[in-house]
Amino acid sequence: MPKRVDHDERRRQIAEAVWRIAAGRGLAAASLREIAAEAGISMRLVQYYFETKERMLLFAQELAGERFAEQIVQRIRAAGGRDQPRAVVRGHLLGMLPLDAESRAMAMVSHAFFNAALVDEQLAAASNWYPPIFENAVAEQIRLVRPETDAAHDAAVLTLVVRGLIGSVLIGERTPEQAVALVDRQLDLVFAAPPSVPEEADPGEQEG
Image (tube, rainbow, N blue to C red):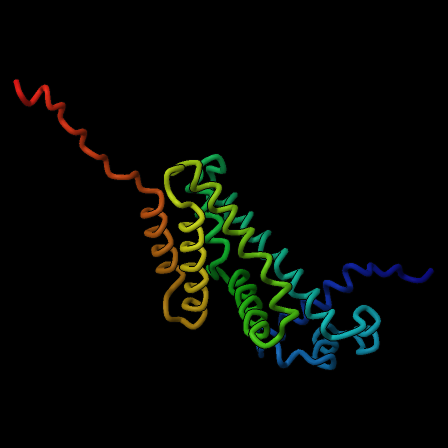
C-alpha cells in the first residue's frame, strides 16, 4: 500500500528549508535548487507544491509569522501573571527578542524577510499586517493600568525599541541580558504611576 503523503507537512518542510537558507546565507541564496537540496527533495516536487518561487516565499514568511506568534505566547506563559497587564506586555516584548538558540534562529529568518521586503512589494505587503495587531494588543494591556495615557503611542515606542534591539543582539552589540534589562526599564517608564499633583489650598482656609 503506498505511503500517504501529508501535504501540509511537506509544505512546512519546504518552508523550513527556506528558513534555514535565509538565516544562514540570506534570502537571496534561496533558489529552487538550493531549497530542494536543503529540504532533501527534488526540484520537481518543490514546484509541485509551489507553482512559483514568490508563492513559496510568501508561504514561508506567513508560517514564520505564525511560529513567531507561538513564541510570544510561550514567553507570556513563562512570565506568569496572564491577568497582570505588565507581565503580559513583557511576554509580548520578550517573545520578539532572540534570547535562546531557537528564538535567535527565528529572528534571523525574520530579518532576512525584512531585508528582502525592502525591495519586494509583495513581501512588504504580506508583513505589514503584523505590527498594528501586535501594537494594539500591547496598547490594550497598557490601558488597563494607565487609561489616562496615550496607550497607542506607548505601544508603538515599546515595539520599535524591541525591533531595534533584535538586530543589536543578533550582531553581538548587546547581550540578551542587556536587551531584557532595557525592555524592563522601558516597561517601568510606561507602567509607572503618574506623579501625584498637590491639591491647591482652599483660599478660605489660608485667610484663617
